[in-house]
Length: 251
Image (tube, rainbow, N blue to C red; front, side, top):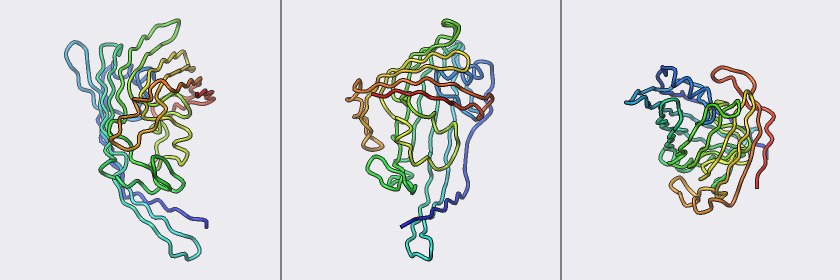
């Protein structure tokens, strides 16, 4: 039976403060250390030229699923979705970047979020809660390598395959092909070379998917998978740049 979805968002809350300083701008300009955010972040200067950039977000959302043609089937859900704290500890000139993202969906939507066609981690027609330790990486960046920039990153993050992080295409609901277009929350070692509008990425990672929001055991599968991606970025400015023409390999 065909099913119709109606998504009603009560309101969205995004906590942020304008980032300041040349170093912060330089960090967001280069994707080597981490995916660039499309909105400002807090900047906290530290000693020796080190600084922290951070942000917090939460989206209260109400979802109604109803059947067309006067059907009696109806399902509703109210959640705080995508509640997260993000912070980067950055060295002078962004040579070293320690990145951490905590996601609290284990408490705000522990039974999943209604999403027609969504699946993964034991959920059907729902999006599963992300892991508490969503990202945790250390990046070593070099800004002048053969006319471009390079980075070596290790930790838990997104494997270079498929589309960019969903934050580059804002929306309350994640796409239903979330698990087909991205490989997320994997322990990995990756390298990136960025020159002009082109980027080349490759990674070795653990292919096992987390079994729940507190599961860290997929580190045991590290090294059983690899991926690579060649991409071109079009456009400029916060929230405008998009990767197109991805050529991805996965094993």
